[in-house]
Amino acid sequence: MPLIARRTLLLLVILAGTVALGVSAQRGRRWISWEPNVAYDGRFTFARIRYTVYGRSGWEFDYPTMERNLMTMVKELTSIRPHTLGSNIHTFDDPELLKYPVAYLSEPGYWLPSESEAEGLRTYLAKGGFLIVDDFMRNEWYNFEAQIRSALPKARIVRLDVTHPVFDAFFHIKSLDMSYPHDGFLKAEFYGIHEDNDPSRRLQVVINYNNDIGDYMEWSGEGWWPVNISNDAYKLAINYIVYGLSH
Image (spheres, rainbow, N blue to C red):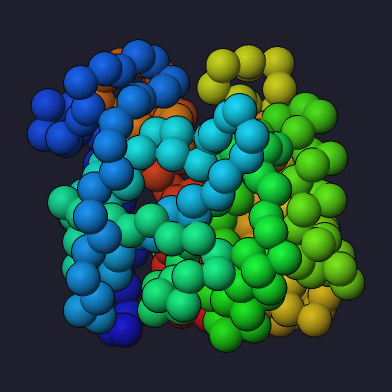
């Protein structure tokens, strides 16, 4: 992976009409059919984690608009050449996931991994994978923590501040002052899990709590959220991807 030059983030004007959507949609949720996974060719491909729970899902929220918008920004602002019109969906126990160094888990407040999926996550991280956890709030933390510990029983979840290298991987982020998009009183918090619980080693999991950068990116071209906040979401996501590819 060549070194990536820093560039100034442009104001985001991404037309919703350029992204293929399903028949029915509403703000915050889209009902769509899954698209075929992109065939592996070594280029960066956005990988989303699929899971099943009784009576409810959440893993697919913001799909596929968020990844289309994000991959467009990655292509425009970095030297990474990702797939912009396609992305992948995998379970943690899918061996194909090991081909993709960065994975995204949405709504972990309702995530209930099987033993096989927990083992798959453990293997993915041990082999160098980087996991972005996003879109959950309030009491949803308790389920997330219980489930992540089913995979990583010895993991120590630590709060991250703006001095962590992940916030300087591409953009120099000076403030983490964000809030949950549908509840401005919920202030975002950022947590992480490091390899061997050593803060000087690789960050394996980054956790956006009381936040939903996926929602900010999904709707960035439709005026639901202030441009500066949408920009902040893109900055975080691009930093996460660059960090995951370089560590």
